[in-house]
Image 1 (cartoon, rainbow, N blue to C red):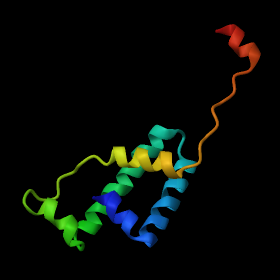
Image 2: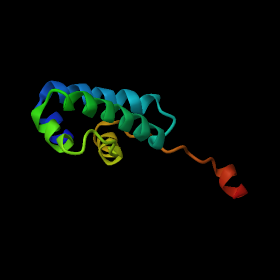
Image 3: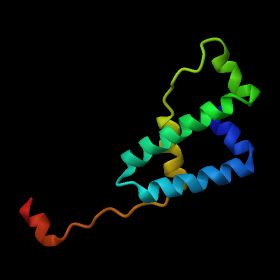
Image 4: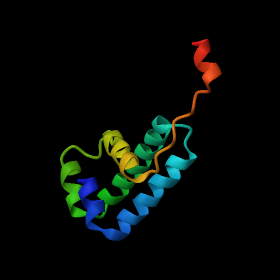
Length: 97
């Protein structure tokens, strides 16, 4: 639902594409980036659920309960963040292994 909403609103999509790039660039690795982005997505979902009717329906009966958005965070990182090159292993370091 969150992904559909973002893709249906070009200004929201641009915002999230840039947010993903910034988070990915600042993070030590992909796991840290995904965790940070997942927290940002949850805050966004909470904010949108107060004003967007389609966001209110799932939370109306049970209240706003925390759900994982990690899969969405990881997907957007793969789609929108630039790939990081793998660290190169020097030949002399391979011999040590």
